[in-house]
Amino acid sequence: MTERSLSRRDLFRLGLVAGSASLATACGWDGGEVPGPRLRRVSRLNDWVGENIFFSPDRLAPEYPVSARTPMRKFPTYSITRPGPPKFADPAGWALEVGGLVRKPMRLTPEMLQALPRVTYTVKHHCVEGWTAIGTWTGVPVSAVAALVEPTDAARYLRFDSFDRGYFNGWDLKSAMHPQTILAYGFNDRPLLPNRGAPLRLYSPVKLGYKMTKYLTAMTFTAERPGGYWEDRGYPWFAGV
Amino acid sequence: MEEDTSSGRRPLVRRHHWLVRVSHWANAVLLVGMIASGLQIYSAFRHFGPRGGPYLPNPWDGEHFPGWARLGGWLGGGINWHFALAWPFVLTGLVYLLYMAFSGEWRSLLFRPRDVPRAWQMQLYYLRLRKEHPPQGKHNALQKLAYTAIFLLGALAVLSGFAIYKPVQLSWLVAAFGGFERVRYWHFWTVWIFIAFTLVHVALVFLVDPASLRAMITGWYRGRFPSHD
Image (cartoon, rainbow over all chains, first blue to last red; front, side, top):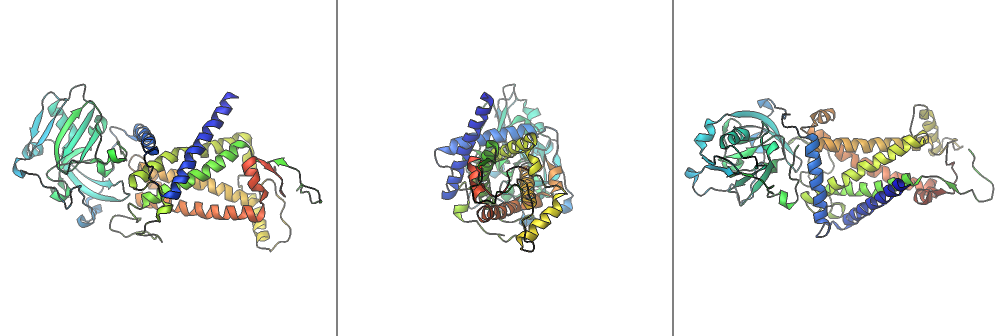
């Protein structure tokens, strides 16, 4: 009997939530101040559950033939800086700062990055907006860079910073160590262009596009979960596809 | 048929279990929220097909839906609403399915091969090509067809939704729907079938059996049709 009345009450609550949803519909209301954080908590739970059910550290995204590439001019470019692309103050002096909870912090110049193990794949890009596009990316696996700097046991997350008006992303280590997570310096057989995130950008075919920080400046191992530019505005944090 | 055609009032009978009623109305509200947040998500990329085209046929290609039809305010809000309502939507469907299975009620609802000729007779009656209302149990054969199909449509909406949610991890599911661009397309079309179903469903309630509205609210029915097979 208790079980029955419990589920009845739960269903009633469900109706209340759904009721407010339909009310919101009528007003084109974005969730406002009150349900915003609650909605985000639900989203965060969903995102975490989805990641734990579906993500596998060694399942790879399918690769496509080069002939399947989306024509370059139809593959959208995007930056927070408008008009883009953002410019680095001292292009010749650019290097990636790798630090945080690591034993050997490093400054990696483009030459050093290109001397590291290289991965090239032709994969499908999934944008949160709902479009997809296929392109070829070349770069060094994040796991190879991690092996160089030796993260400590306390390191659980990675924070990627950029020179694109403070755009940044937080990643969990498991996703960052996925073999297809790379720091890309090449696109479609050529050096990465400024409108695609040059000199260096994060890439992964198992995440939504907004997780892939462009215009990288730093890669920092942390103990606390970093947020992210869009993640802090309400997009899912794991964003695995 | 045990229809009471005498001048006296028809007996008041119990027609719907509370689980059926709660899941029915929860589903109605959740569906509104799912559709409205889905239309908000659609606003972010208003085409079906690879970036740059060619695009699949779509009467709303390139169009935004009006503000009153959207929930979430922007893409992030739409996504959060869509995902938050998705689980209750799935749960409601499962509760309903389990109730149907364990109560045996599925017998009066599931459309089976033997219902094909009965559905045809019912169609003839609605087209006024047959005078007598065909005999029926709790639901006529066309209703069984509609209620079976709409449940399958819900399952299709959920499966295509999962495929869009995890297109890489569920690549087999995406492939079954004909690729990522098409799975978005089918997911979008489920919306219009849901809306068409709802319009016809509501119209028929008032035209054919207004007493069924009370039955779906209170569970009690005083109408012209039997309440069990």
